[in-house]
Image: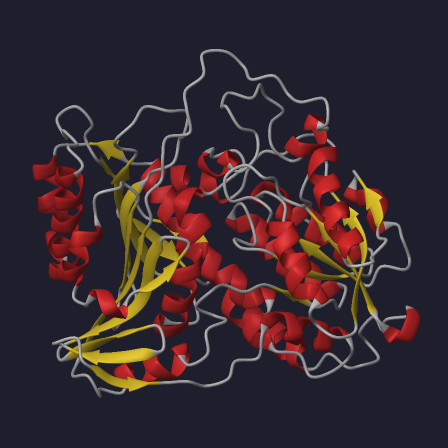
Length: 485
């Protein structure tokens, strides 16, 4: 069975889960007993698990019954929060002990990326329903196994992103696709948000005694901590995170992929680098990526150096059209001959609002818990959708990791195949120049234009052998994501 037929079959299965097949809650007053795995820290943003606890307890009929974190300090923050709400959850440092509890109906996974897949698979095997934070998997192999586990054990496994959860986004996009703003040209996903350096160490950073570091590393290599902060800054280490594409890009690429097509792209090209400071981060902080969809390609543009806001007007939309969050500016836009969309709004070329779509959107939390109760599931939030969208993150990162540092003139020649992508490259140069980046000292990395077969989820053509090695990883003994779930 190829991937296309498999998706059709699994999507059908997702829509036909019956009340009898779902794990009905058996707690007091039929409350769904939820466990949250991964509390987050107070380093930088942190606290994602605690933020999710806040959102989940606001849903009627949901009870925070258990908490889990390998860091006792972070676990303590969460316990304090629960006490303020008269909650007395059980606490665990090892999620495997938590999953043994028969009185847990569902788990909410907010761990670092490298743990998402194994916890999800083990939870499904233990009869629990699962919500997984973005990006759902650390590599493409894991996403496929999570989907297989959800179907094999008949569990609800959901995820979501900002664009997927935005009411009116799909309707505004369809308004543009239907030609109401002139001929659609391409899908543009953009994120600007300044990041600072994460520091540079010359010797391993001591691991706090409050952390089970062996369990924190889990499926990834157990290696010395060569960065200042264990928490959060793992995003910029390839062993644990997926860089900015996986951290912020997935929010925008998910919406873009909904518009572009049901499958992953047939080819991908990345240009980027880590500019502006010398630190222990490995992933790019400035990156443009071309995803080959027909008839509308996706162009992703990410900039994380501080001097940038004056450049938004050069992106084809006005500042008034940008979404903002925690000082970030971002959007997923349909660029057309006579206008563009931003989120749930449509504008003309002069930046005047043409139409706004204010449609209610059933929240992913409500959809998740309702599906557990046996109500009609929403394939819109299903792991099958999340797996495909997250695939774009992995493909873009693989192109970058196989790339080479080259002179800007070579990149300009390479990106000339698409005029819109070439203009994005010129804006990237303007951004770097505004931040005093000398490209002779720090050349950009030009990734190969990788060919990909969405049906088999494998690379083809030149460099396929090298690229396919990045579709999975080697796992530590005892923490393997299984071939047979």
